[in-house]
Length: 457
Image (cartoon, rainbow, N blue to C red; front, side, top):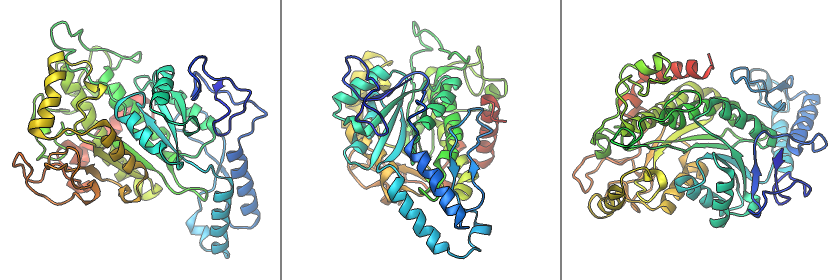
């Protein structure tokens, strides 16, 4: 069942809330929309399609069938205009005006963004920033809905601004189920943010416990940070496309400073270095006992760096494959070094104590959760951050990616940072991205191999 309080969009007062948590919109397990609760958005979309179809301004209605996903989608009407026929007809201006009218009349007043990993850290900070306006409804995708409900309440996010959906990115069946449950909500998708990450830097050390594996048999850093997001992006691509009722959306994939995306960033030069080899591990199925993409010995910190490098490669390849045909903007970013985030909770206590001091007082790369969240929110909502293929980076006051400094959209020129590195921590256009993430052939190969792993080819 779907658990939604009456304050949520499209909810009914009769549906219960989570006991004792007071309330946010929480969807648990599989969603079953009551038969008599016909979704207003899909009803409106269907009505618009019928009216415009009768006017001879829109071609044959098509159900949104996602044959690649293996997920039975919620049926709706695709109102995407076919230019070859549509623009030859008379009354194009009337059709456009009609589309604007129906959009303003029927569409939810809020845009919708899905953010993975919102129960703490950067994801929660970005959700909080977006929720300060009435413009966005946040789908909070996380593994622990009860924890998420408490975190949202503590952050002061209004109940009308979010819905919680259960998502375990390490499980491909959970990703598919999440997509099905999101579509059951009937909301149009304006933005997808791939933020969640697992970091196990000491797993390969003495008493570190060794590699962890998902139920699917994948090493969890690879599965949670990259492969689950890969499947999610591909399954939701159609939802991000534009139509008469909304413009094409954005797909924002978190990057890293640890994998030589910009070959001048000092973070990419700290061992262990990201190294994908020839994707031997993926070609062998990437299942237990294989732990590394290059089929090498397991190193926890490297597994994280490899997975984040793959995320930037995913962004760039999706831009190359789909931007021109769909209008969806694919971007990535490095929001700065958030040393007080929960990402480092698995590290040694001494590291958690000394690392923030080093970043704040020596390297000057520290950025607060709140500021990093605002940076991510800009990539979601600010019109200036809609250049597909971009890798956004903030210079910070010291030029090393910390707080303050030049805004990312203006931070494109090379300069010396406080560590005397030339051209570091700056925004890169798609063809300026370096290393594996800038290698067209390797990006294509990773994408193709990943499709095979998740059953999309």
